[in-house]
Length: 123
Image 1 (cartoon, rainbow, N blue to C red):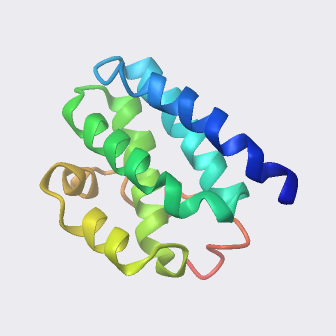
Image 2 (image 1 turned 180 degrees about the vertical axis):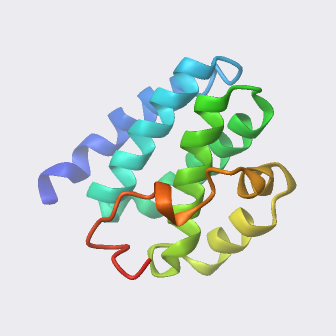
């Protein structure tokens, strides 16, 4: 993990660059995948990733693309189902933001779509 500390600035640069393409469904899906990977494999980055995660989920809720909706709703379900992964302010933001909460009405916002991991076995 110590070696990973130095790479965050590079990752942030890439993710922030991808966030410029907020209306492109393909780029949004790739950006979300990157954020999911980082969130799950680098717990020390989680606080730093919160803004990017909420931005991508918000942007996905505006895109009429079922693949984006599916990816966003599944990740949101995962995040909200394992509250110990989030700080309380981020949990509240994800739960109450009007744009992000649209993803919670998706048919994909369901535990059957979440891949079990060591963090969400209780789901």
